[in-house]
Image 1 (cartoon, helix red, strand yellow):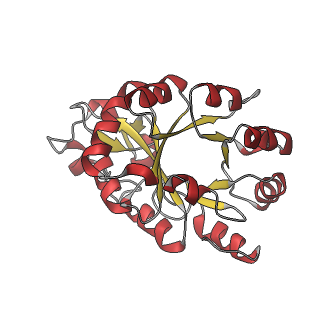
Image 2 (image 1 turned 180 degrees about the vertical axis):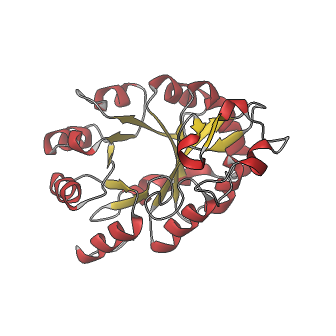
Length: 247
């Protein structure tokens, strides 16, 4: 079994730190990833975008306005000329990490989801991962874009991929068709029927975002394998209360 799949299938459920720990610390920052690891998340998730000079940095939105108060697009700024490192601070305090920095921070301490926000960057993302990580079996590449995941499998069929979706009818069949091993539905779509269907197709089910009791109770009842949350400290505690801990 691949290491990332093992980490996603601990019982009674695995905990995925969304953007590290986006509800507890500035999202998609090294501090957030370290925190999620320290509190016991099984996997952390990050978002990758390309800069003006072709480098890969970790940020969810196409611009820095929401997270840093800077009305500039990621593609407008450079990394090599230090525009991002010198001018941008997430929540006013934390620097924007590169993909390389996140890989070196996680380094197998837990699993890692790398969300590809721009399909055209898929090949470059893989190149960087393989240059930094000897055995990337503790990571998976996830995306809303099936073509990005298909590209990854064309490059290396052994890499783990996961399809994210938020609208009916869902993406379980599509995920199977493109060889993705993981499905990541928005939590209302992770119904008991859908989870059973995904499991019959040998898909791992990761529901998102589980940030409150309502979503948690429903996801637990429906039998998802993992829950992605902005509050990994809270969700790890909920797992502990459920009477189990990670393997």
